[in-house]
Each structure stands twice: as C-alpha cells, then as structure tokens.
Length: 479
Image (tube, rainbow, N blue to C red; front, side):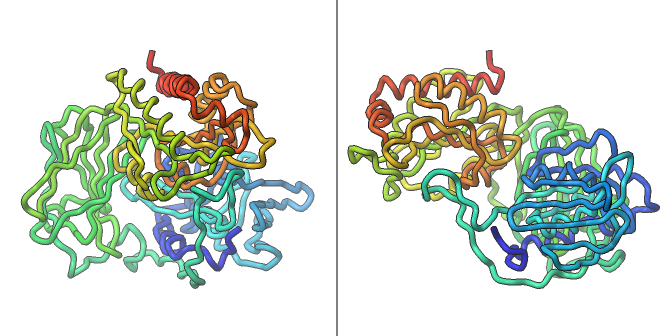
C-alpha cells in the first residue's frame, strides 16, 4: 500500500481545485459528485458547503474506493480503514487520528438526518483520491488512485506498475479571492486569446488569435456532456464580457446539443473549458485544419463502440502453456473470432487493439479505448499457475464495470465448461485506467493440461467467441 507522503504531486495539486471558496451561507449548494465519472447519488442528505469545505455523507465516498466504515455509538467515533490507512474521527471534534497521529480538521464531522457528514478534501487527502472541481456544473470529479503494492490474483504481466514520485509537502488550502480557487481565475499574460466559439448545425468551431489549439476531451454521462479543455488559452474580451460568475452560455443550433457553456477554467496553465450539454448520447469527430489556431469537431449521433483487446503480443508473449505455446497466440486468435462475429451487427463499431502479432504498450491500449469514445472494453487473456489449478476468472476494477463483468463471466463459464473461479476485482491497468465499463477475462489456465488442450482448438475458440458476442449484446440490450 502506498504511504501518504508518497502520494503523487497531482493529488496534492488537484486538491486546490476543490470548492473551498465562499458560496454564500452554509446552505445546500447543489453539488454533484462523480467517482471515475460515475455519478454518486445520496437519497437522504446532499453534499454541501460548510465554512468553505465540502462535506459529504461518509459512505457514499469511502465504499466506492473499497474502504470500510465502522461507527461507535458510545464514543460517536467514525473509523475508516483501507489497507494500512486508519482514520478515526469524532462527531463535532476538529481533531482526527491518522494512523495514530493527531491531525486537525477545518470542519468537524457532523450528523445530519442520521448520516455522518465528513469533509471531503480531508478524507480524500489520505485515501488517495484525485479531485477536479467543475465550476460550470458545480460538481466534484473524483478519481481513485492506484495502490503501489496492489497485486491482482494472476501473474505479473499487465499489473498496474506502482511508482513513488517522491515526497511532497501538501500545499495550503486556497484562499477565496486570491485567484487560487476556480472562481477567480487570474489572467495569464502568456496565454493565447481564444476569440470565437461557434456551434453550427453540424460542428463546433473554436479559434484563437494565435498559437495552437490542442484540447483534451472527455465525455460525461448523467447528464450527457462533452467537455473540451483548451490549455494555454484564455477568453478574449468579447467572450469575457459574456461571463456571469465565470460561466458563459451560447445558444445551440445543433440538433443533438442543448446549449454551449464556457469559462476560464484554470490558470495553471490558463485553460478555457467548453461544455456541450447534449440532448442524448453523441460523439465528436475532430476535423483536420490547415491553421493551428483554428479547431473544429463535428458532433454526430453516437454509435455503439466496443474495443476487443487481445492480451500481450510480439515481444510480450504472456504466459507459457504447459506444452510450450504462447498466451499471445490464444488471445489473438480468440479476439479475431469475436471481431468476425460482432461486426455482423451493423449497430456496433468493433475496434481491435491489435490485429496481428504486435506489441501494444498497456497505456496505448488504454488511450485507444478512451480516445475512441468506446462504450465497452474487453481484454482477453489466458491464465497460469500451478498445474492443478483450472477454471475461468473475470476481472473488473471500477464499480461501473461490475455488471458487464458479470454478464461476460456468466456466458464464458457456460461456453468453456471449466470450473467457475468467480468474478474478481483487481488493478490490471487496462481495466483501471479506461473510462468506460472494462473487463478482463481469463478464459482458462494454460498451465493446466485439460484447460490448455481445449484453448488452442478452433472449435473451442469459436464457442468462446460466440459467448463473448452474446454477452456484449446482452449487456448493450441489442435484441
């Protein structure tokens, strides 16, 4: 487990983006919470601002990150445990115990309508959560960090590689009105002026006075939105004057877009954020431009897209089977059979992370899935252990991937006929860093004589491929 002083600098910097600025009296703020872009909903009590701190119901956060919460009525103490991290907080007390050491809180935990409310930034600081505050939507976007010593059940290939970026000192909380909070972005004299934002009936066009426009993009759901962040830019005076509390709106002529919102989102680096509020699911397609200071993307109807990821490849052969065969050959053969069957359904766009004996780094597989606005990501593997172990296992990481994992597992177990080794949670990179429901299936054990003898036969692979396609259609509700 990664120790607190070794948390990434990114975690500590991103905490500055939490809404610690004044938002009026200590009344409900309408704050929305997202964990890995899954909307978190509390039916009884809502997150709100108290003395400049966001407080949230404890269970809505910690259970999402796999921590355990216990309550001691006699001492009014809340204990949160994850790995070697132990946090103890007492209701109405600003002193907490972190692994036995006293720490001070800006806001004490409280009880509201039977729910324990804790300061979000304080909990996230010690539980490895990255934060981003979206001022346009009054929402906190949280991203779980990986544990440096976490290991999946199966072998060392494809494990999230832990790293220690060095010890850093946590920055002081931002002070309202100083420009360090999202509500008061300071102008950057070196930023390029973004001069126009236009959404036509077909496309979004953005132009700057000079420089180059290379945005980062992400799609969000519940509600459906597309977000474009343009680094090293700031709004020119004509757009700046349209802002009210650092948020501007433009009408939409596009049939798929409700409206356009924009803001000076950040000042380090200066960043303009543009959000398209969608009427339903939609995709973007970046259009080529001869001018670097002009950027265009068409907004089109969403097509269901599935990535089939054949594990390993080329100089990464994967596990060696009991008779000397390579895992990479089984995974590619099976993945290609899945593709052949799935492309017959014209409602689905099928993408292969690799179609031949090529080495694709794990992060490139992740980027391939994320950049193509993928709906589902399935990675196919073969397992290895001692010779007596046999069976099918299916792995997921994020809670929103569990339903997909269950459907895949049910179908593959039935098709393979191997022992059911259950659906499990692990930190394989391709199911951790992807942003859509993502699953890794270990069809069988190449180290087991019976499993391996079946897995390299065409008839078995055909059966597995058909079961995977059936599972994908079942999950996507494609009749």
